[in-house]
Structure formats: C-alpha cells, structure tokens
Length: 126
Image (cartoon, rainbow, N blue to C red; front, top):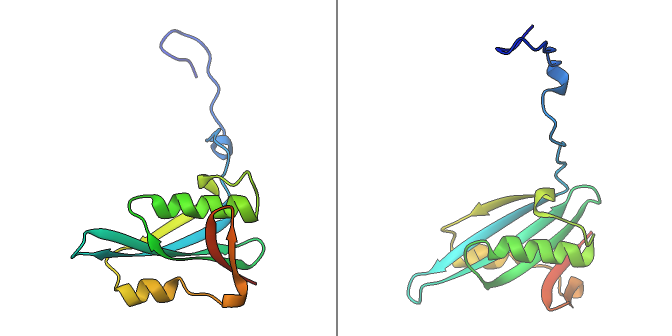
C-alpha cells in the first residue's frame, strides 16, 4: 500500500489501533446534590467506593457547587489511599436536584469511623 507521495505504508494491526494507555478505574464516586433555592446555595455529599480494596469513604453533607465534590473526593483519596490518585482513576457520577434529606442521608456514616484529617472531614467503612 502506498500513500499519495508513493511512500510504502504498512497496514496497522487492529489490535494496536490506539497508542493511548488504558485507564483503569480504581474508585467510583457517587455524589448527591441539593440546591437551597431560598438562599441560592448548593450542598452535596459523596460516597466513594474503593474497588480494589473493597472500602468506602463518605464525604458528609457540605457546602459546594460545580466540581467541588470532585476536588474533595480526590483530596480525601490522596490523603487516605495514594498520593498519586488522579481524576482519571475516579469515575464520577452526580445526581442533581435531590431532596435535602436524601443528600444528608447519603453523607452519613458511623460516628466511630469519622475522621478529620488534613482539614477534610469524612467517614471510613470497611
């Protein structure tokens, strides 16, 4: 096979189609979000599942909007699991327009498993 300049080209093997590395998801973060329509503030809570170690981290009900929940998730994982955790290691799922009580319940954990480390508050469950 030749290109338009007459240079010989080899066919690419379909198995080596992409040169990009395969990214392995290590964590699944499910965020529930509630918006206080009276004051215009947004709140969230997040449950983070560590797929490899079968552990759960829970970010309690807190103020934040936009990608704040993603930032908080990454920081907690960097503090607790691996300093090299990146956004590509985490699959983010956000449920918006939830009820306040749903978001609060989503962010609850056992008091005995509550940590405040590095300025971040979270629950840890085996």
